[in-house]
Length: 574
Image (cartoon, rainbow, N blue to C red; front, side):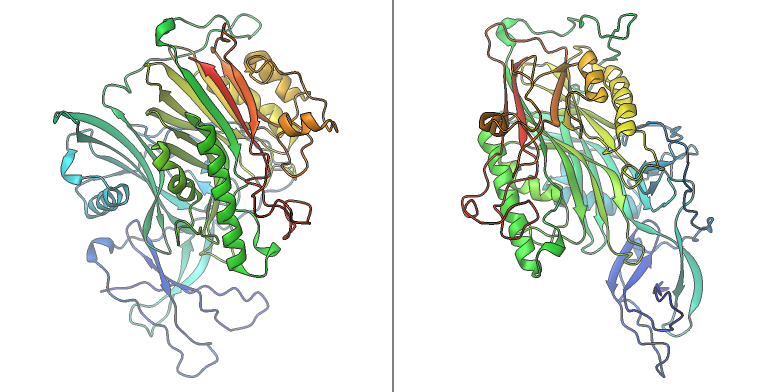
């Protein structure tokens, strides 16, 4: 059976030594890694080891397309507009966005919808893996023209904002002796977006149908599924009209429609939280021992999720959530996916619906097996019926913006009383002009993607203080719930007042100075009974480290906080 072996040479100084990295089996839609053997080309009798045989269903040869070489963008490149994406769209894909997210080419720009035949070997393999990972009974799958439906998104790397795919010279051997040269399109893996209907058996014994929407990414190291999204709802629940929020001639939102509005007895208390999780910090260079770093990260995740469980929000919007191939977690073992680290601690507390959308890729061309992606996420105790996302404007000629693509992820949540609320989670740029552009794009995204009730929340780490132009713009369009629903006064930035530092500022956790984490609301009426409340949470470090002498989030002997940000939570009646 033909086997493709790839070895990369990274000696930039003319040396002939081969660095043993990885073998890559390149097949129809999978890239699988195994350890490589081999010697220096200077050694006599140099060898290259072939792989062991794997199931032929996964070995469907395909040509490797030649694409233009990498072109690094020059200074002065124009800014890019916002681009809308829906991972579960139907029909030919008409989106002209150059990227799927930062660092990954949009492969579906030319009418290709990325569809995978569910009866093909690839489709069967993906479905079997998903049902096993999600612990669902595949025998309950409802098969029809609409179920199951699969889409494939190759993670094809770009380093020039999607104008070209990144290529590298590589070599392969069919028999372990003869070496052939080819150009490799650098691809880090494959994401699959799957929708299916499943029969669920109620306690009464009756069957009811649920629609599941799942996003999964194949882990190249362990060949496992990393679940990026799992949302499920009754089949009829997703049938909901989407309307545009009406605005007056000045562009300000007008009164919200009462369509679908619940009367008094049907209102319920809803808690919604925003939390920047500080990705997979602390970084590797803080600790000499990898085990010490992993243990400290696991302890931090335990504390962060403890704060969430104690506060008991219905919905949590996260920022800086990573897939990090260089990091694992004490609770989940070998998993590199922070969504799994969070889910392992939260799912037993009712957070069974979640979605994560990467915004940016950190790519190291000298280590092609390294994969680090970062984005925003939403966890919910209640069904999510719809998800999509918006890539925000980016300025490649700005040092604060060129390394980080930003995005806002959207989920429509159905509350137990039947009300629908649209939740948007985001993490804005450090670049001021990018933030000024992004808030306008986000407002357009919010007002054109709300359900008929018009109820929406925009949450996140917005990297801007309230007096900034970007926050003033949002405050004109939506309610800053800290002021409107919480009845709080605007704290003076960098105040030394102990109460403000404890209860008002959200960043940084070890030395709070400013309010840059927000919950904006639209169409959410303030409670006449004064039950609305907004609060800052997550102020204290772990009990074990609270007396440590160090200072600063990156000091190895400093107190360990859940994150460099505090959480902010709003309680309202809807």
